[in-house]
Length: 159
Length: 193
Image (cartoon, rainbow over all chains, first blue to last red):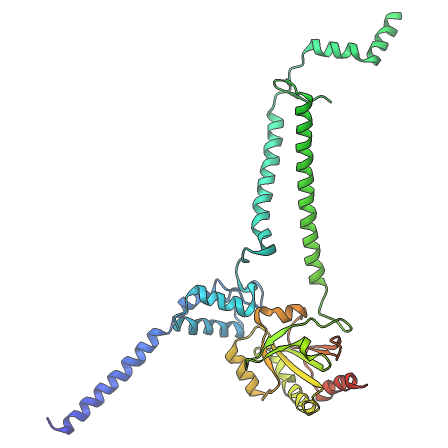
């Protein structure tokens, strides 16, 4: 085959390689869904109580792009999350890490529920419990021992 | 009042132990409530304090600049420190960026004034682009875990603190500077013997 015949073939091959190459490159970039799957678990450190996936500000868009880049570099979700914590603090997390005073957040609600349940249980038990049967003999003996009753009885007897 | 059960009156020892148990329970409940209230009060007090104000000691911090240099406030004792909080996404910060850089270049030869930029909640590429755009040459670094901004209890960006030679906050500006002279006026007053 002549050299001139190879030229168009190599051109076509070259073009095919270029286009498939760019297509592969596009495949490597994570999709918006993949980015948002992680972004929804990270909160915007500037606009409070807004997850990154729905945050409309420019800075949040920058952070979403950062997540995309980190995913493209092969970072795991835990690594990305840790990066954001290291950079911006615990406030980016949906729930505070269980350490220090943060433990109160995890301990107090169940403790309050348990205490409430205990109080409720004890109150209900008091309502249901039948009054103890009073032994008339015991009452009488007690009455006899009562100085005031004895005095009253003697006063009445005198009349 | 006598303590009675379904099985008859309780023995005095049983009554006493029941009373002790009840007392301990009450003490624990009240103690827990008091501790919780104290924590809440501390949190509220902190949130109501507002930014560090004039005359107060400037909280010490250490910052790793974008160039990898370590700077701590305590090592700058004897110099006037201009501490500026900014972010690349902050439009008002752009208003003062050129004036701050001009002021830094004005005082830099004297060696008595140090400017430090603290990049608040930002992404590194955008922060570096911002520094390049405004040709900022004084040391700048990220506020990792927002520790410095929390220590100064900033209310937003930009905010600038002027710390005197003894480490006390002499002046502060919430919002952007709009004139170069406004910056130099404060620093000149601090440099007066």
